[in-house]
Image (cartoon, rainbow, N blue to C red; front, side, top):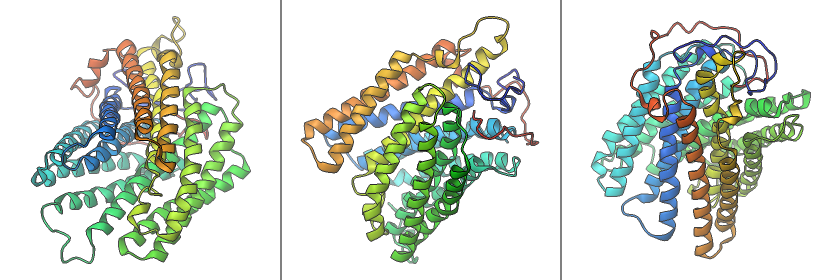
Length: 474
């Protein structure tokens, strides 16, 4: 595992430390690799929420809105997904990550490209966009290749892995489209082609929001709900999940195709499939949370917010997508649904999941070898529960205010107040995660950025092993 191996856990269910049985924790990459993605993502989260609050009271130079959007989605959400997949796929699928070096390179290429991209947009130095966007393109493709090669060794793929595979396909497609859009700022590369910039933008955003990010969430959230709720789906849930798999991935592709071609009936058909598939999936997760046999946790609290946000987002998206599925107003499902989708769905999933993933991999590195020989803390003891409760209350309150402000309109000072609450809540979450790493990480926070990949040789044989039983998670 991280310099020393932890053998496969044999016990069924979940023990007192929240570790499910049957997982191959010895297949994980070194601890610093996923943690590095998470810490850098947390830095971008702070920039995103602070920047959003500043933008609520004053105008920033250049293309600040576009820079803020990419810092939020690519810098926070996508970097966290990249780190989580790098850690989750080997553990869940029972195969070694294809290349540790590529897992390190992907992060720094995307980070360097994103910093340059945001700076160029703010400064109006658009001539640099092809260079910095090229770094992002290479970094995303390295991630797709590395995790994709790892997944190929895990066949046959289960529900989670199939959604991860679909997300990787979308990542691979959206990256060059983003590069073309960046180049087109200064060089008319789309001129003379059948496509116009607006259509390419809609395809890029559709694949990013619903194909890459939301598909990853759909794949992971089911297993995480089973794990934290200690619940198993029954026959009804299995039928609903089959419906989701039949409709959602294909619907995303049809929606993107219709938008790219500018053909409303095709885009509308894809939109309907996406919405129905998501509602079927939400019904499964709600049943899992409602029938939970485990006590509340930071994860399940936030997952309730996620499913409520998904329902609200679907209600908002129905009239927009079914009347104008190819219009820019439906980019986020509804003209006023950005907060609901990005913070209510994406944000609360990321925060809730990291409250387990970060302590989980630190506990395995720091305390797992001591289990049975001395008293060790539980995984949930590694973070500060007071900070956790405070950040949940603040982010939930701020999210509620921002949602109401975006949908019905409120005085500017009220919206700014909601933005301040959200910013404080997310900053407390970031502080909690950094303190967890600092206090319990073998080498503290600084150890996350140690250059050495691992003392073990590079592994690339990807030999498959027995996967965990249904319902287990990392």
